[in-house]
Amino acid sequence: MKITVKMDKNCKENEVVIKCSEIDEEVIHIQKVISTQSNSNMKMELFKNHVEFYEEIENIIFFETEDDVVKAHTRRDIFSTKYRLYELEQILPYYFCRISKSAIVNVREIYSITKNVTASSKIEFKNTHKNIYVSRGYFKPLKSKIDEIRSVK
Image (cartoon, rainbow, N blue to C red; front, side, top):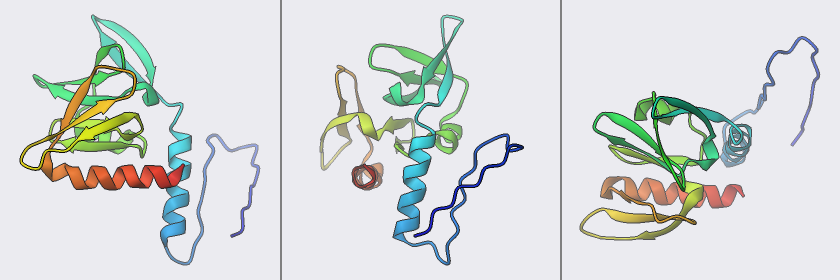
């Protein structure tokens, strides 16, 4: 594999271009690694009691809808966001995954999954009492995402 870095003083935003003859596993892996790294310091505008907060995305353990409001959960707090879940799916880094019609989870923060064959499975997170449930239809995609995240590291 050849890696080339070109400097351009007129460049306003860094850009990574992958040039390939076909998209194979190696190219997909490189794309995932780069996108994960480039979004890791991204901050999101969140709200609580009419106060704006700017939280690093990697500190958010999950998003869920509650009464038509999307809530962002960190280990210690809950904020609201102006985004809808479908919008978050488009802008969040690779390590976030939809787990139900009403929730998106940070896969890196999952501590355990208690599987339930007949109903939703319980997800628990590192260093917090918070938990959420993954719907049966989203369980396999979540497991695939967990495996992919492990292979990226």
